[in-house]
Length: 190
Length: 170
Image (cartoon, rainbow over all chains, first blue to last red; front, side, top):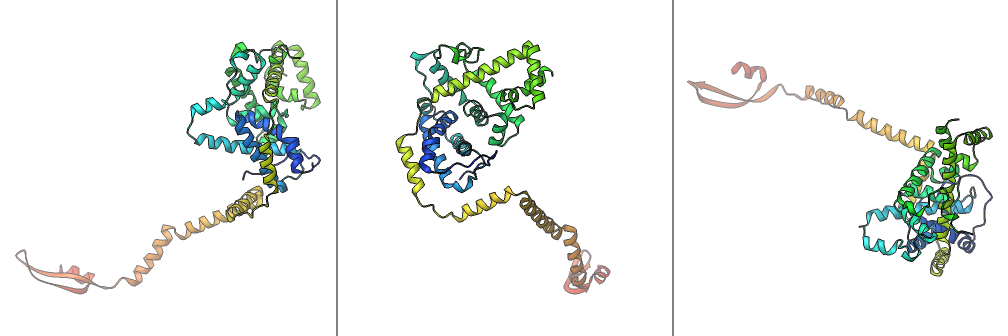
């Protein structure tokens, strides 16, 4: 079993009802897992493993951080283990092509395509860089929170973040205009 | 404040976690420096784009009913007693979370290693063996004695003689 993440800033303890846990945090964890692994089926399994592990290590949660932060810490550990296993597997290119993103060519140049390209590009980053990007831009954590969450220094978080964003800029075709000053969100978005 | 410091402090500036003085200094620098204005604008735009794309890509994703079911079934299952291996692993992990205990274990291990090295040290071992030889070496030893005549061995005898005697005979 993965280690229970050390928790950070003291906050009020939340109740630990299994139904509530799944209803309140299940989908959000699933979405984070999907961005981390880039595969919807795997993301479901990873979320299931995370929640089962959280329920089993219930005594490890001392209410010192938000419940979701604690759950997300477990998810990161589960995903790290998943990626270690993936590295050991023989790379089945055909399977990967089928299961990872296949953006619909009809929706080229639109926001869905950009979003799919970005998530696909994320899979080319290392696990550490992916974690920092997701914590920062999906979980909206501050630098200090990411440092506590991933147990590295703030300097390391900043350098990983800088490197990861530059890599994404390099990986996303320039004509998609994702990293231009206007950004995708500006294009016809309400 | 120069541009290098600005770049270093930019993430904390955006988080608004810098001390008030530094936050104000960064703001002042941005107002004066066109390059840093562009850097800030680019950083904010990238962040917005990435956030927007992530939200768009994941919207509508939800846990499948069978996954929910599996989680609820697992939650209701009685917890199996941890195996010996798991217990050892848990003890080991909890040990390393306490630096004092970890230090004590390391000290004991080092003590054992140095003790073993000292006990098996060659100098010590050879001195012990040397003292044994001094006591056990016999004065008389088996020696092959022969007589020669015109380069031919006439007769020979194996006998217990002292080393000095053997040399004399030879």
